Image (cartoon, rainbow, N blue to C red; front, top):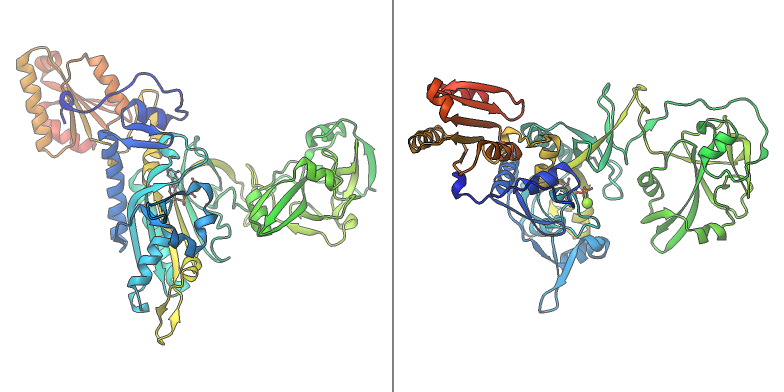
Length: 571
Ligand code: ATP
Ligand code: MG
């Protein structure tokens, strides 16, 4: 590709709206064009990378025995009514009506559509298992589209769906796709982790789900990771133990103490000269399940935080939220002084399992300006309800083996999930089993964000000068430039370009009328693996060209005869 004839524009300034490197660099390197918030066109160089990612994914999915198809981007509302998700999807789903007043939507995901195709096509267990996939556009009207392709509204996803006669078969295919995802992310050169994820109320209790997280400081997710035994889970799901249990076991009475104007756990503990781990914090949450609304008092060790996902799952609630000030007043609770004893109105209390029933803690006294010291769960509460509510944190220990964990940030590039019979049941899908009886098949689904992968690759590898592409997905392999004054030398550079093409390399030839400094800045910004430069003076003196590796910055000088071999060695 000759740059003088190309469609490429780079930018010096970083657009103010771009907060993270991948977004900044994709705009500056002219890879994408913003059309509206969270909606981007892929420009020629950017699109080459998108297609390379698609092809890696396609190759590995095909190798795993999956079948590619292409579903419609617009799906009928009827299907979503059948599964019960027309309303449940909320504002993320872009709905509209056609001129005959029929409900339609732009697919945010395709479980309904694939299940519909399946039920009209597959009749017998003999046709199972089967895994179908597509690489297609999705639309989700995200509350906060941001970070460019990382969290877009329109984006490209590879979504796969498998169908099975039984759980053993679902497990087998799930494992096969788990390994396939590992192969894909290995080929992309990612530093990633497959983490246990939260299944929410989607699958049954034994349904597996994993997220593939690319490790990056700018990631939106938090993951808990143990280097010693490999435990890895999304923080929403992670189960760990506190490492700090310097609890107070010295026998004490429940004593009311004045803590005037000290409302936060930190202030009260400082005032009473106690570590926060010897206090309990009280949180009040309102949970909505169907038509029902109920309030819960949650007790956690003072320096722990609540994991809202765990609470929601534990209660089986549709929504949970901290109780409003009005609700607190109605319950007779005083902010800053809430505690589990001497409640004005009876309410359900849940104690986090990290609280030791025999230890003594400081708690709120449900009275303005007062706390209790010497609260003991075993003694002061009849039949306490205990659950795992705390958010895992840095320095915690694994449940098995007491190994320390750390918190890392991650970008979720893939998510695989055992759906069980959620959709096949709701949509009345049956196949005939060995005995000729109708049976509901089980499903798995496997998502991978193609365009998010592109952003994640840049997030993981870049420097102050620009992008550093992993070999497999760089738009081109080689940036070639000649620093030529004379026409005769330009002709020589042209023949080197031709020989690079003939050798089968993907080459950009920077034949623009510009200085070396300008050209090299662009080359670094675009970040192709190799930069090959033919300078008129050097070449005439020594017959040598220069190769620079973008990643390491390492320079090599080579004679023309050995140029192709050297490039082959480096790529
Ligand atoms: P997130 O928690 O980041 O919103 P999700 O759980 O909604 O992700 P899935 O429904 O599992 O994601 O979708 C499968 C994959 O599609 C994700 O792992 C991610 O790589 C990609 N993806 C999801 N939402 C977006 C988005 N708004 N922009 C780009 N890629 C996305
Ligand atoms: Mg989402």
